[in-house]
Length: 227
View 1 (cartoon, rainbow, N blue to C red):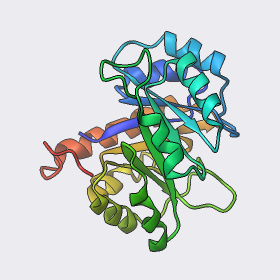
View 2: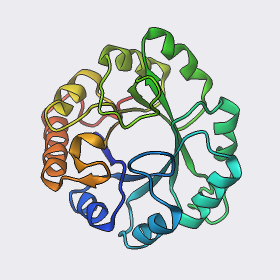
View 3: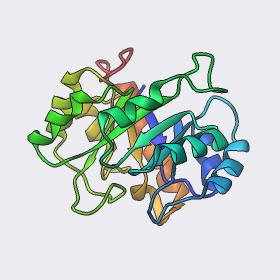
């Protein structure tokens, strides 16, 4: 099954609805954005979630100590870096973390804004747990609602790490994206909103339904961890 991450959560109602619809992960934006949330509010929401839901914190060129502070305070399961972070910067978070899972490690995801084939050349240097591919929009780190050439995502899969597809995905096009790319996961935010930071629960439901249905109907997808 294609994993689903609902990003840009700003309130408990949306978080609980995402969990009710069986989202695999929910994301909190700790960077400049219409969907930004402070660590106190994020922690309050996270404490109200049931177990077995992965909680992801999104950061953009944030200082390492600040990331660790928020990570520990909110008890994040994974870190997603959406800026110009170096491979060395990302690698430092793959070390043992006190109070985390039995393995003692936190998961890391590096986001790349895909402009053209040249963009793909920088990806292999990052030894993270997954690559998130988003659309390139001048001056924006993400959450633009724009898509990119999915042929490039297919090429990125050859690198050998799990691919999380983002950028302009919504209820109307996510099935096509999954059939073409067969990503490990998909990430959605702006295309299922009423206003920035406030989710449209009907669009969220339609998105989840489209992903689940496409994954189940695609025999070549079943039983494989794509990416």
